[in-house]
Length: 300
Image 1: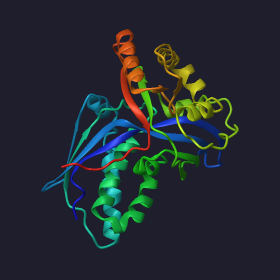
Image 2: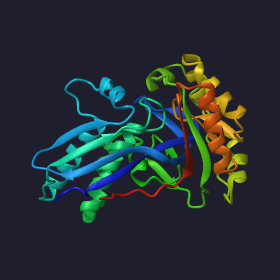
Image 3: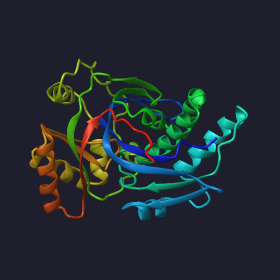
């Protein structure tokens, strides 16, 4: 069988709130998080081929290439290998494909880029062979805690070590701006710098009818990784302040950083903020987007 050909969006994953609630004996941290997906992301293009091929392009291709561990597969090729194991288990073969990853998201930036890329490959396998969807999705769990939620790209409450995912069906689409000040932040380093690991979980979610309900909820939440990340990379605080100065109704760091997000009342306000921030910080990555649940798929 051939993977679903075409270009597949790999949306950025944004942790609107992230509470660290404990650490298990196996040293995995337990979390309570509200996740939404952006309309900006990487793009994975799949084409039938005589032999497998992988190419990188896009503004962050060089940075990603530098981060590769010699001899180790990147997240997309690891996902392909695991999908092939599942297919073989059912007596099928995934045909060779030429894969092109257009890297538009900053690397090591707290917005799930590698997980989103792997998830796009998983979606291509599910689209090619829907009757194996459950098996493909189960295999995706071994690719990383963020990958299963990135397969669906739906706003969700995530708890435990990332395996408990509860979709939020009433989450509104919210204009937003993402900012990365160009400082890669190590997730393990941020967790090591975390002072308190047994924190209260998020409050119970209300019914969301619009952005104002979301804002009210977020003001009662935290990102417990933000303070240690700022100690490691103080520029994160500068980026958050820049969003507030540009008119964001709410601004916070996503994941373990260094990307921060700002929520806005309208697309126009978000667009104006992008221009203002780029003028003051021309070296930063700044993108207008919308946050919520994102429809993904392939296009020839």
